[in-house]
Structure formats: structure tokens, C-alpha cells
Image (cartoon, rainbow, N blue to C red; front, side, top):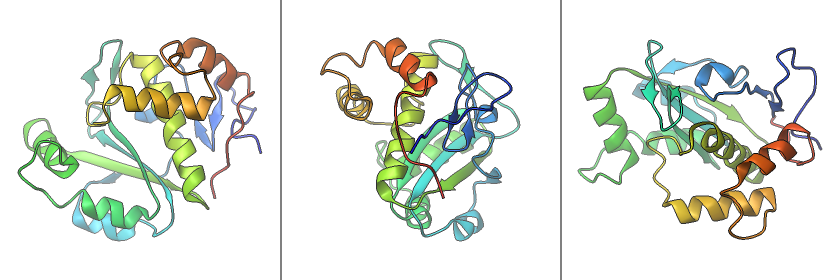
Length: 190
């Protein structure tokens, strides 16, 4: 199965229905799903299936990145979307807790929104997350601000998925060329 589809009038690839343009902001994720204000009620709407989810700043706010700016705060995946999103509501007084950091951003910067896409398997969701993280990193020279994986683990995850030799994930230009030329196979969403 090809994960990337042709037919994008803008010339960018499609990622499992997600239209990706040259710089990664939430507006480039065309088919991710409707963006919803981040609340307890929103969590109830999320499916119990595997999938990916993305948090962004509302009201078209962006955060300066090392290269460019983005409104994307966090890219994640789960075997059960609703359960994972529910976990992100459980605030603990620990900075490494994603819920704590989401709440702090909301209090200090402004409203958050979330969107998701379901997949028919956890492996397909994990592959989609890895690809989105790889593209985000290639566009901004860093990962989304609330993704807390230590850099070495992120690189190993991307190397594994893109089938790069160990230590070569730093050179994502070649990996992105593979992705954009549709030489990397990944699953379709449901």
C-alpha cells in the first residue's frame, strides 16, 4: 500500500489523506479532521480506535521555531484515542506530564484545539506519527514543543521507520526526498 498519494494540486505529498505542504502547520494537515476546542467534552467525541492526534494553538497563533513558525504543539498516537486523550486531562504537578504542560500552555498562551485521524491498526497509527514527526523536524529543525521524547530516542524511531542506517536520521533531506517521491510505503488510514 502506498501511504503517499498523488493528485495534490499544490505538488506536496499526501500522508494517509493528510495533505502536506512545504512548512508544517496544522493548516497543512487538510484531512486530519475537524479541529475541536480542547475540553472534557471533546474527549467523549474521540473514537476508541487506534489513531494519531495533534494539538495546536487556537486563533491562528503560532510559536517561533528554530526555523519558521508553527501552531502545532504536540503530535501523538494511541491504540485507543479516547483513552489517551482522557489521560491528557489528568494534570499532575510534574513537568514531564503532558497534561500539566498542555494546561500550562492554555493558561499562559491561550486556547488549544485538537484533531485526530483513526486507523485500523496501531502499527499504521505509529507509522503515521513517525512520518509527521519526521516532516515536522525537517521543516523546523526540531520536534513540536510538547513532544518530550529525548532526542536520541526520536532519531532512532525515525531511523527505524525510514529504514535509514543508524546515525543517519540527522540527514532527513534524503529521507524526505524518498517520502516525496513515494518510495516509502506506509499504511492508509481508515
